[in-house]
Image (cartoon, rainbow, N blue to C red):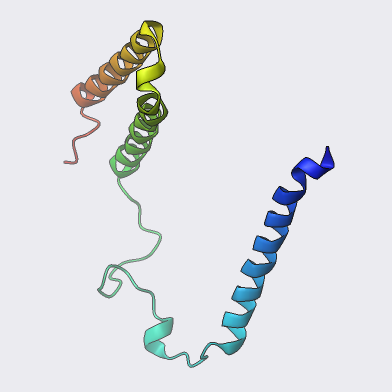
Length: 118
């Protein structure tokens, strides 16, 4: 039974050793000439103009979370699309129900104004 997992364990070991070795080699051989420009914080191509701890609007996080939720739900369509030819009518109905719930949730969020930025 352990023989079945040996290639996976070997792959994990070799990839871990290579990852650590490449990081160490890069750190050892890389140039170390820091200056004020390299050590300064980079924010979208311009100098920082306020405190880094300023508060963001909650709507920014709401839109980000909604994007992640709907993006992950759409990702469930890919496996279904791969086997579309081989599945029967119950699976097609189940996907229609899934998409219906997704659309109802999207319309609800749209009507509540969660997607409005201003």
